[in-house]
Image (cartoon, rainbow, N blue to C red):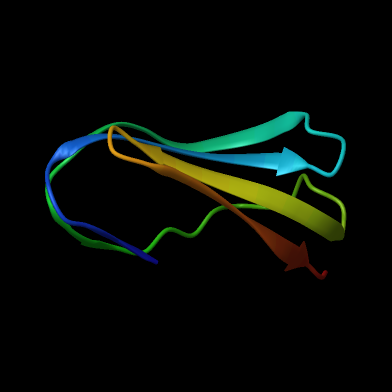
Length: 68
C-alpha cells in the first residue's frame, strides 16, 4: 500500500535479487490518493524480491519475501 500526495506518473516494478526486472505492476498516471497493489506471482519462485516505487518526486525500494 502507498499514498500518493499529488497526481503524477507512478511506476511500480518488481526485481529479482540479481536486479532483473520480473514484473511491472504500475506504469502510468495516477490521481492523488491511497492505493493497494496485489499481483499474480504464480510464475515466480519463492524467494526474496525487491520492489521499486518511483514517482516524479521520489523513488524507494524495499525487499519482500514470496513464500509459496
